[in-house]
View 1 (tube, rainbow, N blue to C red):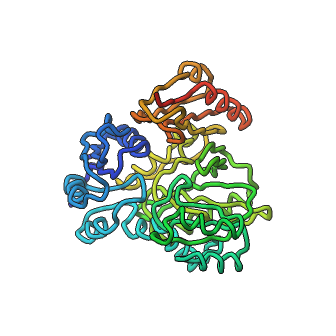
View 2: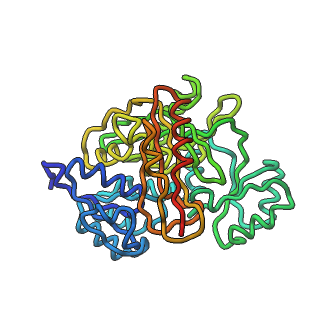
View 3: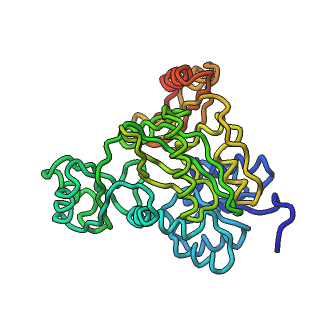
Amino acid sequence: MEIKDKTKQKIGIIGGGQLGKMMILEAKKMGFYVMILDPTKECPADSIADKHLIADFDDEEAIRKLADKCDLLTYEFEHIGVEVLRELEDEGHKIYPTARSLEIIQNKYHQKNVLKQNQIPVPDFMHVSAVNDIKEGAEEYSFPLMLKSCKGGYDGKGNVLIKNEAEIESAFDSLGAGNKQLMIEKYITFKKEISVLACRGIDGKKTVFPVGENDHRDNILYETKVPADISEEVEKAADKLAEEVLDIFSGVGMFCIEMFVTENDELYINEIAPRPHNSGHYTIEGCVTSQFAQHIRVITGLPQGDTSLLRPSVMRNILGTGKEGKAVVEGLEEALEIKGVNVHIYNKKISRPGRKMGHITATAENLDTAAEKAFKAAKYLTIEGK
């Protein structure tokens, strides 16, 4: 039965991390009831969710319980069992993005196959299951090349850059020695990494956010600058590619499409995330409508918001330092003294080196000034394990 007051819909989110928390913050502005499923009792979203179902992400009975108690489901990361979501969809439950989208995207080999079949530019790739397969691939693609786990990788985990033949065997062993599905990709020499945040509604209407330019360090996103330093032609081409991707997957909700820009201004799709994304955090302060508000709007059938950039913005991740231990925040007052700086602390109880513990967004009249503010604030603000 159609719910006339859309705010009476109950939203279920699989995952209670920082992305889930930021979804809830926007959902609460519009009056929605939100229930989460997450195995960690004190996860970031726990303190603001209306109800927290404490269960593992592969607990099919718990996911069914979440679906039964909510009018629609969404998720904040890809690595969940898709079989139960497919079954729930077949039974009439609303899941956004769809289980079909998730099933293809969560396997990088399948994802690239679908993109290639639809004439979307991707790096050359092939499935591998043994050292000799990689050697044959190297003869075709040359070195360096990327070895990737087809499923389960994030923040660079599950990816190994192979620079020469001597590194093949150790790279193969580091990713399970054939116990996991693996693929290799031709290495793309790029001048920039960009991400396009795009949203598609239930009605098929699409909106695209300003393109972000990403700086990764040790395979973890370090900083995103907006607007990206690219030509108008490249920006239009990137936007067009993103919209084509949304249509290919019949996506509903926020998607992030990561791309490489070559020296010749060619674009190649790197990876797709069917959800709000780390590189889109700048939209909270930087845009009229944030990626999280947009996601909540479309999955509940509400009109999409204006995605215009308000001011040049720089987002900097705050990663855990020190050792693994109880998270201690230092330098918050000094960081907030800087005009135009906003701080988001995820409230993860345990910090460990390299873990995403929060982020800073700086806005200013120009990008250079915003970058200076973000850099200065990040020097003050630390979240250390004690």
